[in-house]
Image 1 (cartoon, rainbow, N blue to C red):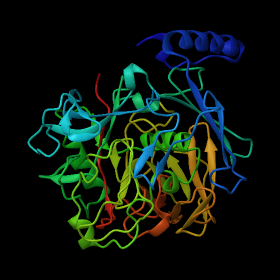
Image 2 (image 1 turned 90 degrees about the horizontal axis):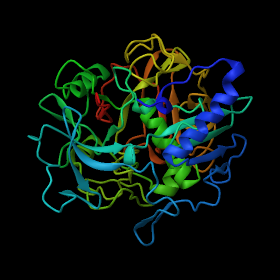
Image 3 (image 1 turned 60 degrees about the vertical axis):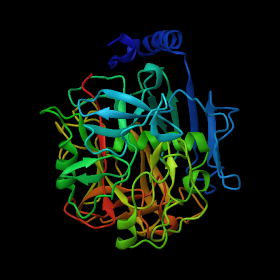
Image 4 (image 1 turned 180 degrees about the vertical axis):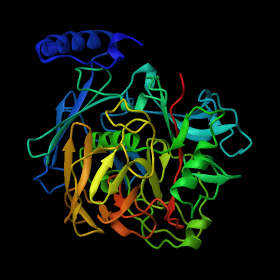
Length: 436
Protein backbone atom coordinates (compact mmCIF):
# COMPACT_ATOMS: atom_id res chain seq x y z
CA UNK A 1 0.00 0.00 0.00
CA UNK A 2 1.42 3.41 -0.94
CA UNK A 3 1.67 6.25 1.57
CA UNK A 4 -1.11 8.03 -0.30
CA UNK A 5 -3.60 5.26 0.44
CA UNK A 6 -2.67 4.76 4.10
CA UNK A 7 -4.86 6.29 6.82
CA UNK A 8 -3.38 9.58 8.03
CA UNK A 9 -3.34 10.39 11.76
CA UNK A 10 -1.77 13.76 12.52
CA UNK A 11 -1.59 16.26 15.36
CA UNK A 12 -2.96 19.78 14.90
CA UNK A 13 0.48 21.35 14.48
CA UNK A 14 1.42 19.50 11.33
CA UNK A 15 -2.03 18.94 9.87
CA UNK A 16 -2.13 21.78 7.35
CA UNK A 17 1.37 21.23 6.00
CA UNK A 18 0.95 17.45 5.74
CA UNK A 19 -2.43 17.80 4.04
CA UNK A 20 -0.95 20.18 1.47
CA UNK A 21 1.91 17.78 0.72
CA UNK A 22 -0.51 14.86 0.46
CA UNK A 23 -2.80 16.77 -1.89
CA UNK A 24 0.06 17.74 -4.22
CA UNK A 25 1.48 14.20 -4.24
CA UNK A 26 -1.92 12.69 -4.93
CA UNK A 27 -2.68 15.16 -7.71
CA UNK A 28 0.60 14.35 -9.42
CA UNK A 29 0.24 10.60 -9.04
CA UNK A 30 -3.48 10.09 -9.58
CA UNK A 31 -4.89 12.84 -11.76
CA UNK A 32 -6.17 15.19 -9.11
CA UNK A 33 -9.92 15.11 -9.84
CA UNK A 34 -12.18 16.41 -7.05
CA UNK A 35 -15.88 16.65 -7.87
CA UNK A 36 -18.13 18.30 -5.36
CA UNK A 37 -21.70 19.30 -4.67
CA UNK A 38 -23.55 21.16 -1.95
CA UNK A 39 -26.97 20.10 -0.65
CA UNK A 40 -28.90 23.03 0.81
CA UNK A 41 -31.15 21.53 3.45
CA UNK A 42 -33.36 24.63 3.51
CA UNK A 43 -34.19 24.44 -0.20
CA UNK A 44 -37.21 22.28 -1.01
CA UNK A 45 -36.75 22.16 -4.80
CA UNK A 46 -34.83 18.88 -5.39
CA UNK A 47 -32.91 20.38 -8.33
CA UNK A 48 -32.19 23.81 -6.87
CA UNK A 49 -30.95 22.36 -3.58
CA UNK A 50 -27.92 20.78 -5.31
CA UNK A 51 -25.07 23.06 -6.40
CA UNK A 52 -21.90 21.89 -8.11
CA UNK A 53 -18.53 22.54 -6.46
CA UNK A 54 -14.86 22.15 -7.43
CA UNK A 55 -14.29 20.20 -10.68
CA UNK A 56 -18.01 19.56 -11.11
CA UNK A 57 -18.64 23.26 -11.80
CA UNK A 58 -19.71 23.65 -15.41
CA UNK A 59 -20.52 19.95 -15.85
CA UNK A 60 -23.78 19.04 -17.60
CA UNK A 61 -25.99 16.79 -15.44
CA UNK A 62 -27.03 13.37 -16.69
CA UNK A 63 -30.65 12.32 -17.17
CA UNK A 64 -32.85 9.71 -18.75
CA UNK A 65 -34.34 10.99 -22.02
CA UNK A 66 -37.76 9.39 -21.68
CA UNK A 67 -38.92 10.50 -25.12
CA UNK A 68 -35.98 8.89 -26.89
CA UNK A 69 -35.78 5.96 -24.44
CA UNK A 70 -32.07 6.59 -24.04
CA UNK A 71 -29.83 7.73 -21.22
CA UNK A 72 -28.04 11.06 -21.68
CA UNK A 73 -24.78 11.04 -19.72
CA UNK A 74 -24.28 14.79 -20.00
CA UNK A 75 -20.65 15.38 -18.99
CA UNK A 76 -20.37 12.16 -17.00
CA UNK A 77 -19.78 9.41 -19.55
CA UNK A 78 -16.45 7.77 -18.82
CA UNK A 79 -16.11 9.37 -15.37
CA UNK A 80 -13.34 7.84 -13.27
CA UNK A 81 -15.86 6.29 -10.85
CA UNK A 82 -17.91 4.43 -13.48
CA UNK A 83 -18.06 0.67 -12.70
CA UNK A 84 -17.63 -2.32 -15.04
CA UNK A 85 -19.91 -5.39 -15.24
CA UNK A 86 -18.10 -8.67 -14.75
CA UNK A 87 -18.41 -12.29 -13.71
CA UNK A 88 -16.70 -12.56 -10.35
CA UNK A 89 -15.45 -15.87 -9.03
CA UNK A 90 -16.17 -16.88 -5.45
CA UNK A 91 -12.52 -16.25 -4.56
CA UNK A 92 -13.01 -12.56 -5.47
CA UNK A 93 -11.12 -12.63 -8.78
CA UNK A 94 -12.62 -11.57 -12.10
CA UNK A 95 -13.28 -14.39 -14.54
CA UNK A 96 -14.01 -11.91 -17.34
CA UNK A 97 -15.76 -8.63 -18.05
CA UNK A 98 -19.18 -8.37 -19.67
CA UNK A 99 -20.27 -6.33 -22.67
CA UNK A 100 -21.88 -3.33 -20.90
CA UNK A 101 -24.54 -3.10 -23.62
CA UNK A 102 -25.39 -6.81 -23.63
CA UNK A 103 -24.62 -8.84 -20.53
CA UNK A 104 -25.30 -12.09 -22.38
CA UNK A 105 -21.92 -11.54 -24.03
CA UNK A 106 -18.39 -11.20 -22.79
CA UNK A 107 -16.37 -8.18 -23.89
CA UNK A 108 -14.97 -10.26 -26.77
CA UNK A 109 -18.47 -11.02 -28.05
CA UNK A 110 -18.62 -14.67 -26.99
CA UNK A 111 -21.41 -15.99 -24.78
CA UNK A 112 -21.28 -15.19 -21.07
CA UNK A 113 -22.42 -17.23 -18.06
CA UNK A 114 -24.85 -14.71 -16.55
CA UNK A 115 -27.67 -17.30 -16.52
CA UNK A 116 -25.60 -20.38 -15.69
CA UNK A 117 -25.98 -21.09 -11.97
CA UNK A 118 -23.20 -23.68 -12.19
CA UNK A 119 -20.75 -20.78 -12.63
CA UNK A 120 -18.84 -20.55 -9.35
CA UNK A 121 -19.49 -16.88 -8.74
CA UNK A 122 -21.83 -14.02 -9.54
CA UNK A 123 -22.59 -11.21 -11.98
CA UNK A 124 -21.23 -8.09 -10.30
CA UNK A 125 -20.26 -4.47 -10.91
CA UNK A 126 -16.57 -3.74 -10.32
CA UNK A 127 -15.78 -0.37 -8.71
CA UNK A 128 -12.28 1.11 -8.84
CA UNK A 129 -11.76 1.94 -12.50
CA UNK A 130 -8.15 1.86 -13.73
CA UNK A 131 -6.93 1.31 -10.19
CA UNK A 132 -8.41 4.59 -8.94
CA UNK A 133 -10.23 4.29 -5.66
CA UNK A 134 -13.19 6.54 -4.92
CA UNK A 135 -12.42 8.91 -2.04
CA UNK A 136 -15.25 10.73 -0.27
CA UNK A 137 -15.28 13.70 2.08
CA UNK A 138 -18.42 15.09 3.74
CA UNK A 139 -18.36 18.55 5.33
CA UNK A 140 -21.55 19.19 7.31
CA UNK A 141 -22.91 22.65 8.03
CA UNK A 142 -22.86 23.84 11.64
CA UNK A 143 -26.42 22.64 12.21
CA UNK A 144 -25.91 19.43 10.20
CA UNK A 145 -28.88 20.16 7.93
CA UNK A 146 -26.77 20.93 4.85
CA UNK A 147 -23.52 19.54 3.57
CA UNK A 148 -20.72 19.63 1.01
CA UNK A 149 -19.84 16.27 -0.52
CA UNK A 150 -16.56 15.79 -2.37
CA UNK A 151 -15.72 12.76 -4.52
CA UNK A 152 -12.14 12.35 -5.71
CA UNK A 153 -9.84 9.92 -7.48
CA UNK A 154 -7.15 10.52 -4.84
CA UNK A 155 -6.91 11.30 -1.15
CA UNK A 156 -6.89 15.07 -1.51
CA UNK A 157 -6.55 15.54 2.24
CA UNK A 158 -6.77 13.41 5.36
CA UNK A 159 -10.55 13.89 5.63
CA UNK A 160 -11.13 11.92 2.43
CA UNK A 161 -11.86 8.25 3.03
CA UNK A 162 -12.22 5.18 0.84
CA UNK A 163 -14.21 3.03 3.27
CA UNK A 164 -15.71 0.98 0.43
CA UNK A 165 -12.29 -0.43 -0.49
CA UNK A 166 -11.45 -1.84 2.96
CA UNK A 167 -12.00 -5.59 3.23
CA UNK A 168 -12.80 -7.75 6.26
CA UNK A 169 -9.10 -8.03 7.13
CA UNK A 170 -8.78 -4.23 7.27
CA UNK A 171 -6.74 -4.17 4.05
CA UNK A 172 -7.27 -1.49 1.39
CA UNK A 173 -7.93 -3.31 -1.90
CA UNK A 174 -8.18 -2.09 -5.49
CA UNK A 175 -11.83 -2.97 -6.07
CA UNK A 176 -15.14 -3.69 -4.41
CA UNK A 177 -18.17 -5.32 -6.03
CA UNK A 178 -21.92 -4.75 -5.92
CA UNK A 179 -24.64 -7.04 -7.37
CA UNK A 180 -25.99 -6.62 -10.88
CA UNK A 181 -29.28 -8.28 -9.89
CA UNK A 182 -31.62 -8.74 -6.95
CA UNK A 183 -30.51 -11.74 -4.93
CA UNK A 184 -31.82 -15.18 -5.88
CA UNK A 185 -31.85 -18.15 -3.51
CA UNK A 186 -30.13 -20.97 -5.40
CA UNK A 187 -29.75 -24.00 -3.13
CA UNK A 188 -29.36 -21.81 -0.02
CA UNK A 189 -26.72 -19.60 -1.65
CA UNK A 190 -27.66 -15.99 -2.44
CA UNK A 191 -26.73 -15.38 -6.06
CA UNK A 192 -26.63 -12.42 -8.46
CA UNK A 193 -27.49 -14.15 -11.73
CA UNK A 194 -29.75 -13.47 -14.72
CA UNK A 195 -33.00 -15.35 -15.33
CA UNK A 196 -33.74 -16.05 -11.65
CA UNK A 197 -36.76 -15.64 -9.44
CA UNK A 198 -35.94 -13.21 -6.65
CA UNK A 199 -35.49 -14.45 -3.07
CA UNK A 200 -38.15 -13.55 -0.49
CA UNK A 201 -39.51 -14.25 3.03
CA UNK A 202 -36.10 -14.65 4.66
CA UNK A 203 -34.96 -13.09 7.93
CA UNK A 204 -31.86 -10.90 8.04
CA UNK A 205 -29.88 -13.70 9.68
CA UNK A 206 -30.81 -16.20 6.97
CA UNK A 207 -30.02 -13.68 4.23
CA UNK A 208 -26.58 -13.13 5.77
CA UNK A 209 -25.99 -16.88 5.96
CA UNK A 210 -26.96 -17.37 2.31
CA UNK A 211 -24.78 -14.47 1.15
CA UNK A 212 -21.83 -15.73 3.20
CA UNK A 213 -22.31 -19.15 1.59
CA UNK A 214 -20.53 -17.67 -1.45
CA UNK A 215 -17.30 -17.54 0.56
CA UNK A 216 -14.81 -20.25 -0.45
CA UNK A 217 -13.36 -20.38 3.08
CA UNK A 218 -13.65 -18.72 6.48
CA UNK A 219 -12.67 -15.23 5.28
CA UNK A 220 -15.59 -12.84 4.75
CA UNK A 221 -15.26 -11.72 1.14
CA UNK A 222 -18.99 -12.04 0.49
CA UNK A 223 -21.73 -10.50 2.59
CA UNK A 224 -25.05 -8.80 2.01
CA UNK A 225 -25.06 -5.31 0.56
CA UNK A 226 -23.72 -2.74 3.01
CA UNK A 227 -24.59 0.84 3.98
CA UNK A 228 -21.19 2.27 2.95
CA UNK A 229 -21.70 1.10 -0.65
CA UNK A 230 -25.28 2.37 -0.75
CA UNK A 231 -24.18 5.75 0.58
CA UNK A 232 -21.43 6.12 -2.02
CA UNK A 233 -23.62 5.07 -4.93
CA UNK A 234 -26.37 7.46 -3.86
CA UNK A 235 -23.85 10.30 -3.62
CA UNK A 236 -22.71 9.50 -7.16
CA UNK A 237 -26.30 9.54 -8.41
CA UNK A 238 -26.89 12.96 -6.84
CA UNK A 239 -23.63 14.18 -8.38
CA UNK A 240 -24.44 12.94 -11.87
CA UNK A 241 -28.07 14.07 -11.83
CA UNK A 242 -27.55 17.31 -9.86
CA UNK A 243 -30.77 16.57 -8.01
CA UNK A 244 -32.11 14.65 -5.02
CA UNK A 245 -35.10 13.50 -7.10
CA UNK A 246 -33.49 10.32 -8.38
CA UNK A 247 -36.76 8.94 -9.81
CA UNK A 248 -37.25 11.97 -12.05
CA UNK A 249 -33.64 11.91 -13.27
CA UNK A 250 -33.01 8.19 -13.73
CA UNK A 251 -36.42 6.47 -13.81
CA UNK A 252 -39.32 5.83 -11.49
CA UNK A 253 -38.70 2.12 -10.99
CA UNK A 254 -41.35 -0.52 -10.32
CA UNK A 255 -43.55 0.97 -7.60
CA UNK A 256 -47.28 0.67 -8.34
CA UNK A 257 -49.54 -2.38 -8.61
CA UNK A 258 -47.20 -4.95 -7.12
CA UNK A 259 -48.34 -8.13 -5.39
CA UNK A 260 -46.55 -11.27 -4.29
CA UNK A 261 -47.77 -13.11 -7.40
CA UNK A 262 -46.59 -10.32 -9.70
CA UNK A 263 -43.19 -10.16 -7.99
CA UNK A 264 -42.86 -13.95 -8.25
CA UNK A 265 -43.28 -13.66 -12.02
CA UNK A 266 -40.24 -11.40 -12.35
CA UNK A 267 -36.99 -12.86 -13.63
CA UNK A 268 -33.71 -11.01 -13.24
CA UNK A 269 -32.08 -9.66 -16.37
CA UNK A 270 -34.96 -7.66 -17.87
CA UNK A 271 -32.54 -4.87 -18.84
CA UNK A 272 -29.47 -6.89 -19.86
CA UNK A 273 -29.29 -4.97 -23.16
CA UNK A 274 -30.05 -1.47 -21.84
CA UNK A 275 -26.54 -0.31 -20.97
CA UNK A 276 -25.52 0.90 -17.53
CA UNK A 277 -28.49 3.27 -17.06
CA UNK A 278 -32.12 2.92 -18.06
CA UNK A 279 -35.52 3.91 -16.74
CA UNK A 280 -38.98 5.09 -17.67
CA UNK A 281 -41.30 7.78 -16.31
CA UNK A 282 -43.90 5.18 -15.34
CA UNK A 283 -43.76 3.03 -12.24
CA UNK A 284 -46.50 0.53 -13.02
CA UNK A 285 -45.89 -3.19 -12.71
CA UNK A 286 -48.08 -6.06 -13.88
CA UNK A 287 -47.68 -9.78 -14.35
CA UNK A 288 -45.27 -10.39 -17.25
CA UNK A 289 -44.73 -6.65 -17.64
CA UNK A 290 -41.55 -5.45 -15.95
CA UNK A 291 -40.07 -3.02 -18.47
CA UNK A 292 -40.38 -0.05 -16.10
CA UNK A 293 -37.63 -1.43 -13.87
CA UNK A 294 -34.87 1.09 -13.24
CA UNK A 295 -31.19 0.39 -13.88
CA UNK A 296 -28.33 2.56 -12.59
CA UNK A 297 -24.59 1.90 -12.66
CA UNK A 298 -25.36 -1.40 -14.37
CA UNK A 299 -27.58 -2.66 -11.52
CA UNK A 300 -31.25 -3.62 -11.84
CA UNK A 301 -33.84 -2.35 -9.37
CA UNK A 302 -31.58 -0.11 -7.31
CA UNK A 303 -34.95 1.16 -6.12
CA UNK A 304 -38.47 -0.18 -6.49
CA UNK A 305 -39.67 -3.75 -7.04
CA UNK A 306 -38.39 -5.12 -3.71
CA UNK A 307 -36.89 -3.73 -0.53
CA UNK A 308 -33.19 -4.61 -0.20
CA UNK A 309 -31.89 -5.35 3.30
CA UNK A 310 -28.47 -3.83 4.02
CA UNK A 311 -25.89 -4.28 6.76
CA UNK A 312 -24.44 -1.31 8.60
CA UNK A 313 -27.52 0.89 9.21
CA UNK A 314 -29.94 0.40 12.12
CA UNK A 315 -32.43 2.27 14.28
CA UNK A 316 -31.84 1.17 17.86
CA UNK A 317 -34.68 2.55 19.99
CA UNK A 318 -34.61 5.89 18.21
CA UNK A 319 -30.85 6.15 17.71
CA UNK A 320 -29.84 5.70 14.06
CA UNK A 321 -26.55 3.81 14.20
CA UNK A 322 -24.16 2.86 11.43
CA UNK A 323 -20.98 1.04 10.49
CA UNK A 324 -18.92 1.77 7.36
CA UNK A 325 -16.40 -1.09 7.44
CA UNK A 326 -16.55 -4.76 8.42
CA UNK A 327 -13.86 -4.14 11.04
CA UNK A 328 -13.18 -1.13 13.26
CA UNK A 329 -11.28 1.01 10.74
CA UNK A 330 -14.23 3.45 10.63
CA UNK A 331 -14.04 4.14 14.38
CA UNK A 332 -16.75 1.70 15.37
CA UNK A 333 -15.99 -0.85 18.07
CA UNK A 334 -17.84 -3.84 16.59
CA UNK A 335 -15.48 -6.41 15.12
CA UNK A 336 -18.02 -7.31 12.42
CA UNK A 337 -21.52 -6.39 11.27
CA UNK A 338 -24.31 -7.55 13.58
CA UNK A 339 -28.10 -7.40 13.93
CA UNK A 340 -28.20 -5.50 17.23
CA UNK A 341 -26.22 -2.32 16.51
CA UNK A 342 -23.82 -3.09 19.35
CA UNK A 343 -20.52 -1.29 18.77
CA UNK A 344 -21.95 0.80 15.93
CA UNK A 345 -21.48 4.58 15.71
CA UNK A 346 -24.35 6.97 16.45
CA UNK A 347 -25.43 9.40 13.75
CA UNK A 348 -27.19 11.58 16.30
CA UNK A 349 -30.47 11.09 14.44
CA UNK A 350 -33.78 10.21 16.06
CA UNK A 351 -36.19 9.94 13.12
CA UNK A 352 -39.21 12.21 13.37
CA UNK A 353 -42.17 13.46 11.38
CA UNK A 354 -44.67 10.96 10.02
CA UNK A 355 -43.43 7.42 9.44
CA UNK A 356 -44.28 6.53 5.86
CA UNK A 357 -43.98 10.15 4.78
CA UNK A 358 -41.40 11.73 2.49
CA UNK A 359 -37.92 12.77 3.64
CA UNK A 360 -37.78 16.52 4.26
CA UNK A 361 -34.55 16.74 6.21
CA UNK A 362 -31.27 14.85 6.34
CA UNK A 363 -28.54 14.92 8.94
CA UNK A 364 -25.03 15.40 7.57
CA UNK A 365 -21.99 14.22 9.49
CA UNK A 366 -18.37 13.67 8.48
CA UNK A 367 -19.37 10.04 7.81
CA UNK A 368 -22.36 10.61 5.57
CA UNK A 369 -25.96 11.68 5.07
CA UNK A 370 -28.77 10.18 7.14
CA UNK A 371 -32.55 10.57 6.68
CA UNK A 372 -33.92 12.42 9.70
CA UNK A 373 -37.38 13.93 9.21
CA UNK A 374 -40.36 12.73 7.16
CA UNK A 375 -42.48 15.82 6.47
CA UNK A 376 -41.99 16.38 2.74
CA UNK A 377 -43.68 15.33 -0.48
CA UNK A 378 -43.07 13.37 -3.67
CA UNK A 379 -41.78 16.51 -5.39
CA UNK A 380 -39.84 18.27 -2.62
CA UNK A 381 -36.57 17.76 -0.75
CA UNK A 382 -35.43 14.11 -1.18
CA UNK A 383 -38.73 13.03 -2.81
CA UNK A 384 -38.34 9.56 -1.21
CA UNK A 385 -40.06 7.81 1.67
CA UNK A 386 -38.90 7.24 5.24
CA UNK A 387 -40.41 4.70 7.64
CA UNK A 388 -39.29 4.40 11.24
CA UNK A 389 -40.15 2.87 14.60
CA UNK A 390 -38.21 4.37 17.48
CA UNK A 391 -39.36 1.72 19.93
CA UNK A 392 -37.61 -1.30 18.42
CA UNK A 393 -34.26 -2.47 17.05
CA UNK A 394 -34.76 -2.01 13.32
CA UNK A 395 -32.45 -3.34 10.60
CA UNK A 396 -32.46 -1.14 7.50
CA UNK A 397 -34.17 -1.99 4.26
CA UNK A 398 -33.97 0.47 1.40
CA UNK A 399 -35.21 1.49 -2.05
CA UNK A 400 -38.91 0.68 -1.70
CA UNK A 401 -40.99 -2.07 -3.29
CA UNK A 402 -43.55 -2.65 -6.02
CA UNK A 403 -46.51 -1.21 -4.13
CA UNK A 404 -44.94 1.80 -2.35
CA UNK A 405 -45.90 4.30 -5.04
CA UNK A 406 -43.76 7.42 -5.45
CA UNK A 407 -42.07 6.84 -2.07
CA UNK A 408 -39.44 4.66 -3.78
CA UNK A 409 -36.07 6.02 -4.83
CA UNK A 410 -32.36 5.89 -4.16
CA UNK A 411 -32.77 7.70 -0.83
CA UNK A 412 -35.84 5.75 0.30
CA UNK A 413 -35.19 4.19 3.71
CA UNK A 414 -37.13 1.95 6.07
CA UNK A 415 -36.02 1.83 9.72
CA UNK A 416 -39.21 0.12 10.88
CA UNK A 417 -38.42 -3.59 10.46
CA UNK A 418 -36.89 -5.96 12.99
CA UNK A 419 -34.13 -8.26 11.67
CA UNK A 420 -36.51 -11.20 12.05
CA UNK A 421 -39.13 -9.77 9.70
CA UNK A 422 -39.54 -11.86 6.55
CA UNK A 423 -41.93 -10.81 3.79
CA UNK A 424 -42.33 -11.29 0.05
CA UNK A 425 -41.55 -7.59 -0.39
CA UNK A 426 -38.11 -7.83 1.29
CA UNK A 427 -34.99 -9.36 -0.25
CA UNK A 428 -31.26 -8.88 -0.34
CA UNK A 429 -28.28 -9.39 -2.63
CA UNK A 430 -24.60 -10.34 -2.21
CA UNK A 431 -21.68 -7.92 -2.26
CA UNK A 432 -17.95 -8.63 -2.24
CA UNK A 433 -14.75 -7.03 -0.95
CA UNK A 434 -11.88 -9.28 -2.11
CA UNK A 435 -8.92 -10.29 0.02
CA UNK A 436 -6.43 -8.68 -2.38
